[in-house]
Amino acid sequence: MACTTNNQPQITLYELPNFEGRSKIFTKKNANLIDAGFFDCASSVEVQAGVWVLYQHNDYKGNICVAMEGDRINLKQVQPIDKGIIVYDFDNILSSLKPLKGDFTVAPNIEVFEGDFKSRSIKFKDDIRDLRWYNMNDKVSYIRVKSGGWIGFEHVNFRGIQTLFLTDDHKMTSSDGVFQNDKYSSFRAIQIAEPLSPVIVDRIEFHLDQANHRDIPVNVFLWRQKNKTNTLQRLSITKEKSITTEDTYEFRWNQGTKMTSHFEMTLGIPEIGFGGSMSIGTEVSHDIGSTQGTKTAKTETWTVHYPSDILPQTELKLTSNLTQAKLDVPFTAHFKQGNKKWEERGTYWGVQYYGFITEFEETRL
Image (cartoon, rainbow, N blue to C red; front, side, top):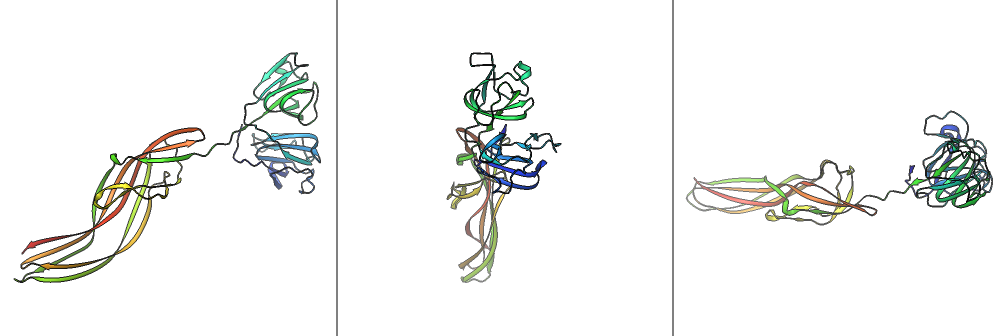
């Protein structure tokens, strides 16, 4: 069974076997491949999406070849370059093609009858490579397709002329291709995997009540002045300094969580405010993937003005600090994919800078 990745049908034709030579991609039906420059010259095909019917003649007539998503087919009886390549006998006769409409994600189900619908029958849900195993080779007349689609083959192991059977009762009739009474030896089920819904992170809850953070002072300015006299000194000091800080955040997912390296999401993350209080910040785009440390560097220029009185026989020390906060906050992420919902857990880890505090310290000489 193939895994579908594209809702739009797509097939690639190649001029030579084993997907070599000139090629052309088709995404819709074409009744005459002369106009596309590929009339009666395709020797191999790859189906990227959907189910396609290839026709021997123009205007969707003649013998057919059915190819489904994921198929890599040599239309010529040559040695394939790997074991995954299917070999059919449909070389240099492809003149028109079209995608087949229908839901082929359902489980296929077929019942084949020796005669009419009251005669001996056998039910299948998987490919039938050889009807001789069931004593039904070259005996099938009526066919009941209960779900999906099936390709009937003239010979065992999916060889020879093909006939298409879609969901219906077939009384020596077919959905496409020539019906061959008492000449079927194998059947192949048409089935492609249902497109996978995208994985969505619905929301993330940060458990602030379980958060930890550690504050580390980062010095910006340090100024000392001594007054060795017996009179009060009045000073006015202005200082300026540029420093670069680097905020870092990382979503550390618990072991076993299948999170991609990068996953963009709009959300607010934990922030440390003035006084060390923690809250959830403004919602902006963040990478919540399993990358190690997303860093945001910024350079700021700090200017301070210190108007101070220094008492007699006193040393005054002025210190201005930023605070580096290292925090870790447990979180619960709510995922969904189609109708499936589940939770994953981890820890938000970050380094942030906040506050600008100036402290005064007086020491007697």
